[in-house]
Image (cartoon, rainbow, N blue to C red):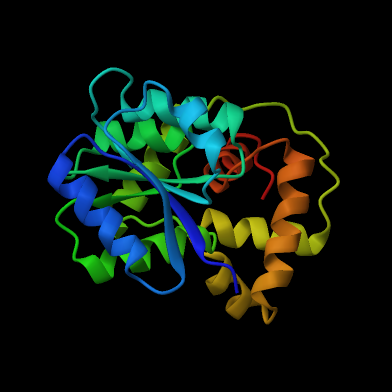
Length: 213
């Protein structure tokens, strides 16, 4: 099995180096790069495209939220896990709206970091229950009802999308519907294509906005 490729964008040198050694020192993971800012992130990421990015929400130059927008444009299949020093609902929500898959506190244990990376790689959206509820509430408050469209989702795809809206990871969805993780991933790729989105967050936002499920 190929290792999960992870890139780090973190301006705190000590944390950046600690995460670099943690990832490279954990079986099944490899760090493709550790950067102090995101000013040249497209050039940096093209050298070795990761599968998961740990992104500092506040960096000098281009901040983490703006960086997520750039990543979504150039690397739509890459999952982004925001890092923050404290629970900052407003910025976390902005990051999620920009396309981030979840967030993690910088005080999280090394084991917690590894689990969060695995979670987001497997289709999850790591965040506390309170933040998940807050994000869902904010989505519902900020959406503008759109005309219903027929995206030709199959009943199974609608069922999976409904579970995704509830905040479940691909693995949890597979367990719920009695399927396999790989089958759920395949369905999600089809859902992304039909909805014209590139992330779980965008899929959930569109599902709520257009009342697809």
